[in-house]
Amino acid sequence: MHIHIVHAHPEPASFTSAMKDMAVSVLRAQEHVVSVSDLYAMNWNPVASAADFGSRQDADYLVYALEQRYNWANGSIAPDIQAEVDRLMAANVLILSFPLYWFSTPAIMKGWIDRVLLSGLCYGGKRFYDQGGLRGKKALVACTLGGQEHMFGKDAIHGEIDAMLTPLLRGTLAYTGMDVLTPFLGYHIPYLDQKERAKILEDYSARLLSITNEAPLPMPSLDDYDHQLHPKSR
Amino acid sequence: MHIHIVHAHPEPASFTSAMKDMAVSVLRAQEHVVSVSDLYAMNWNPVASAADFGSRQDADYLVYALEQRYNWANGSIAPDIQAEVDRLMAANVLILSFPLYWFSTPAIMKGWIDRVLLSGLCYGGKRFYDQGGLRGKKALVACTLGGQEHMFGKDAIHGEIDAMLTPLLRGTLAYTGMDVLTPFLGYHIPYLDQKERAKILEDYSARLLSITNEAPLPMPSLDDYDHQLHPKSR
Image 1 (spheres, each protein chain N blue to C red):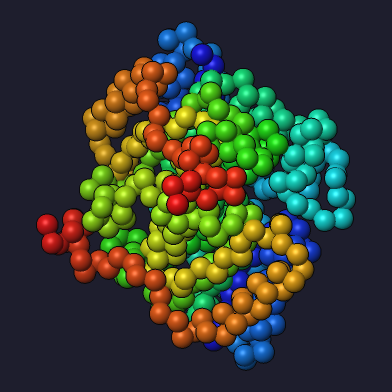
Image 2: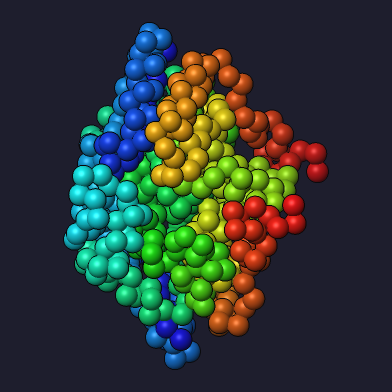
């Protein structure tokens, strides 16, 4: 299998970075082909703008998704985006590796999502959720956070972690058609000792051995909605 | 009142930008003091990094939130961040104005959140939710999206819009202590005609007249949790 890891952490010696390094070696030892986009190391530009397009369907008025579609069809997407699209399309599994910032991805990774998950290629019209352009691929979110596990749940102070991750798991990864795996979450990282951190690395390593066989999270299917996207059961 | 609008759209002639311009004039006509951070126009840097700090508590290992705290106390936060912090702290009301990208903020605005909502000033230790550093301020999300209203709801294809906005409304704005108002959502924008768009501008204008008197959305209170942040009722 081809596995592509998109990683974002401003500190190369961080625990999150250690998780990414371990993922690379564990997966390579399993004979998988592994590539990594280390966004901080690449000085990745996260800002979606007119500069992303080598040609324009409408030179006077920028509708970003529309120009994505036009430039994708035309082969004129900016080279930094095209290189990431190539890595994504070659992959059977996408891993997003990052520390949770404000219960979501750091801006540099949000900008990978905004710029690389092209309209036209990854979704468009009725091509989303189980009809999305990236169906057949799997996606795993592997992230670290400061909060503790008991701070998430039905009556917990931050509510369900699944609700916090909804825009990413459902609204982004599942939206493009990918099979979304249960996220791997490293809780309370800044406050753990070395032994506790080693245990999380061990759990992550064990988890990585099973990702190619795991059942994905349940997500919407277009089959359950009519042509105007109203639920069929109504 | 002082009202600060943080706006992000790559097209100055966009409908979202028209909403922002209208907000400025409507609120000024009400004798409010209005400031705007137009992130694309400012060429705002969204990437949290070591360059954000004029001094370092630990020069060898970057823990971003820890250096925010240290540099805030020390007066050595990068000037572009400090300028935004000053505008935020002067405001009674914060408005975030943006098009929904992947059910969340565009990366350039996520980077305003990551870099400006400083640990130490806006939150830290047990200072979050109703004990957060920005309590007393109000926050309004005003965003545009391509989806239609019937695509959101309990059995709708994208689920509840509140769930999609949870990391922003609860995990970010309420987390810092702000009173979070019901978001203003402009649905289906790219597909509307001029008359339909004018109606949304009119609704937004009417809405802006009431924001200083509105009751905020219910959010967690630390009073309901013990010192380890377990629910007290357990």
